[in-house]
Length: 383
Image (cartoon, rainbow, N blue to C red; front, side):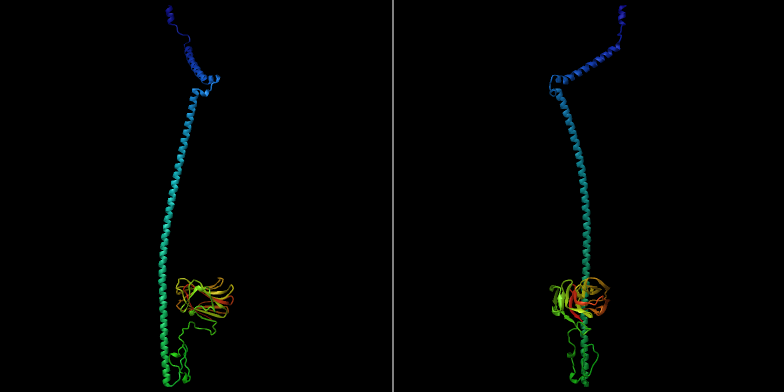
């Protein structure tokens, strides 16, 4: 009975024993940890030991140091990666900028090539046009020379025919016993004279010296022929080097070569200039009159080689009075005349009127002539 009772016995509080064991284990672990911590940290402090000299502390410090090194290394790596990215971006921008510069340079090269091509084409066109202009000018000069030669031949034939006719008339008069005299060219009349005054043959003809002007007035104030150069007593050149003396006249060697009269003139006045034009595509032939201080007038004939284009009347200060288109050809013996009566001015080219106008005040002063380079001045008459 007693044995059966012992077998059936069980603890009264089994759960209390399990929780007690667990609690005991926890307390033992806590005590171990607390003791270790007290031994590591508290005991050296209580015993006045240097805690930094302990092995555990050194290991902990080394671990912290290593962690700090790892973080610094990570920061350096991150900074390097950032720098590398920045450098890559800069390299990309530099590459883009370089490519942009290359494109710009390529465009500039293409533009420059186009400009060079256009300039070359323009230069060739200008050269071609200049060659054509020179050919035309040469042709005009040749034609002018041929016309002049033809005119001279015609004049010689006419003079020879006149001589023959006069000789025939004189011979007939001598045969018939009637007195006869030869009159100068242009006079269609014969008069009876004593027999001893009868003239037969070429000695009765006018002088062979060619007449440059057809004088419209018997009063000549200036009658200058420049075959022997510029007469310093009558004219003042702009510069001695602006004109060169050649057979038959003086030639302008610069544009705007000027000769001015030493004498003053007032209305009425006629100024006639004989010259050979310059074979240039744009030339101005000027006659300035009534020059007194800043007063005076000027007539400007603009021509392209041997063709008159424009005739202009202006004041000496550049104020325009009138300007007309001019029609007419310039020859090897061109005559340009300016006639002023009171306040009325008339301009004639080779006997043809090309401009008429009125002046605000009658001119009173000296005159001047300005020619382009290459023009050849033969003579000047002032009446």
